[in-house]
Length: 343
Ligand code: SF4
Image (cartoon, rainbow, N blue to C red; front, side, top):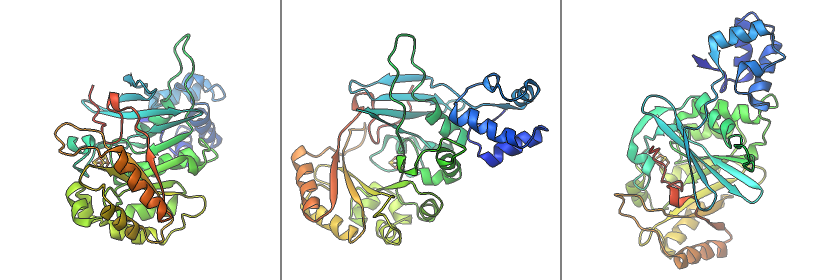
């Protein structure tokens, strides 16, 4: 049966009207699903019993609990959701003082086939529906068990889990609308970041239709090297991506980040840092330097802390904000590039 979560206000209103209900029931549904986050029709007490019965005969709410979870020594929690026969995805909950970020998945597997990524190695299985994406956000952190301290509610969501979000923009856009609309979760778009290899027409669409932050997976400024690590470079060269981004304003509310995983002897020297500075030019952005996490079968190695510091300091000396991202959840394979949805 079709799920109600993942539907926008217009779509929920259509559902209500198709069941012979007044138009305002659409808004009531949005409120129950996205603000009060109920998981069953029985809880929607301002909707008549007859209408609730019609809804449950024709729809499901779509709320699914995670199948399992694994907790890291550093507090990071990796959740596994089943999204169909033999299909699983993972979401990673990352608490940090008074913040909690959820890294959500947008596809089962991924078509982009980045050499250094465990998800890419799975190949592509399916796109997630808006319901399956927003369910991750609505269902994490789950209600605490008796005696357990409640986990910090989500403050941020990053589309950096399994899949290339812009390869499933038809599902990602309605999720962003639900998260930011006053009738939905009413989040500021500043709490949401979408990460991409730079899928060009869709990236433009995202920039035009939303106000969310954007993160571009650069990983090396050298086009040939990038082509070997990221096959998407052929269709969407990083220079073209940067040129397109230069047409947008990232100096105010909206933030642009460049993601740069550092590998020993591959992209960790001053020549690469200089090339990166040239690639950035006058673009207003920050660089996130990411520690690499070993993946079986991948002949790449993390670089040393000294190299990362040297690289960061060089970028800073050129007036570019660069930060070394702390590593989270590596012991449960929840860190960047490690998600493979193994049961
Ligand atoms: S790094 Fe991202 S885009 Fe590349 S294969 Fe992995 S999930 Fe896909």
